[in-house]
Length: 296
Image 1: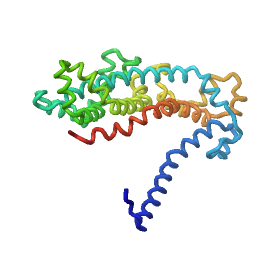
Image 2: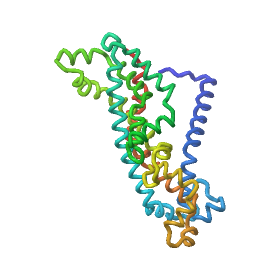
Image 3: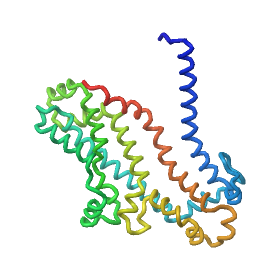
Image 4: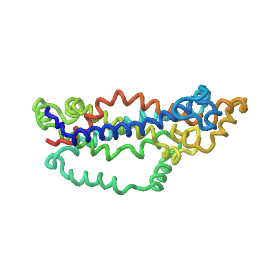
């Protein structure tokens, strides 16, 4: 590969590298600050002496978080929501995108169906009508209230449809010659080829379900049914009350931690599952983003 060694090219490389480093620091430093707060004492945080390194190291905030029964319950609810919600999302996305990826000769009215789904991205039903539907179907205060309203993510379905349109039609034709039906072709031919795209959609759905807090606030009437992000959002206003409620020795506890350190610890604990999952899907993620850009 021949590289341009001109002054302008070198200057562009230097500026681009510096900008990328600055953008990386802008993403990393807030996380380090939150982590440092969670490991610092109450006095150090109140004095504003904590930046990116813990001051007066203590694990009191994490001990308090792990002993908070509602935090553990909400954590479990979020885990169940991600497992069930991602499964529903991926299945609905694949079985909807599969027929829509065919041409108009094989699926009559295909363009009409695609236009209908695209319209739903622009014009939603609205928050109040959606709430009324969930309430009338008896799903309030249940896990399915967080899953069914978004069972088919149309945006991800369109991404998957573009992935499928990029697969050479010869693969399907060869399977049909061997006597395979549509279901066999989907599971035995297409899905193995679509691993990167399925991993990409799965990662998007995991992040969406895990980070959503408004659904729990809208559909859950009881705090005990809150998913983790909704519970963490509620702590922004009443963490001091939680400290008094769950601690037998409030005065002693407040010397070692306060509302800021407690919230920082719980926010960091909430981010650990996503940080643990991403490395396993990262190798598929970049490839999956580019598969749909080339059409056969």
